[in-house]
Length: 307
Image (cartoon, rainbow, N blue to C red; front, side, top):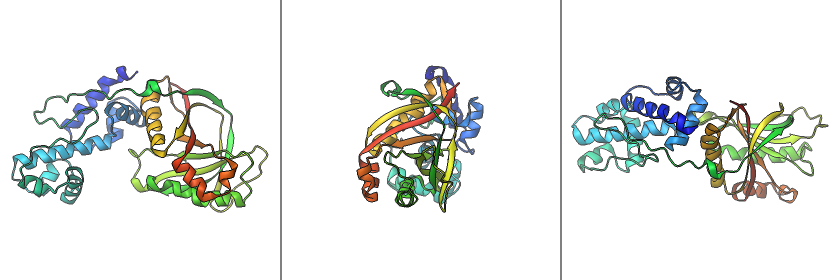
């Protein structure tokens, strides 16, 4: 299926090259590619190896570096010409990417203006179409199963903020779940990540720490703990034993490579991490968090429907 979509992604790369001065959003590019925003973002990242935002930002920086080499324009003009909203935003991003300020880059007359790009696509000075080689397909090495998941209810605590700090909600959720008598002898803990960093402001990422409630539970929520019911659905599941870095890699392979090439599409608002933790570990909440981070046994779950 990736082969069928490759011409659309190549056309998108050409559009991006020709419109770097303009505002470029996932939604507008997806519309031109005749795809939904979420599907387009997944296919683009799977083929190009970086998100749309990362790709556009890198090309704008490469363009800015070329302008610094060729012209004596002010940094403010170069920032504007290369698609940045301000001189300050350009200078910060440039130093982070190249390791030196724009002024120093120009003074030292540096020749190396290309930044690392997974698929080999760079800013094209001549205006010719970019050379595009899709990154290797890792989806064939990931084992999945298709499962009919019955309906279930969860008690959860919501986190909103930077994605990198989402795990901290477990420090408050686990003691509260224990205090409310929600942790059974065989608990099922779930983590729900709702937002794509392509489509969501960095400080608005939503994540739920949750525990599955038994069918007979009458718990209806209290304080920061809410209750949500999920209908029966078809799920794609993948088992993982490893570290947090392995978890990110597995989600990338499942979401950005396997799913776009499959006969399924997302049916719901998020994917789910199901954490497998022994009751002994749960007696020590701090050790439980450490187990999450260092010795993960997780089932990755995505609700899907046929395309």
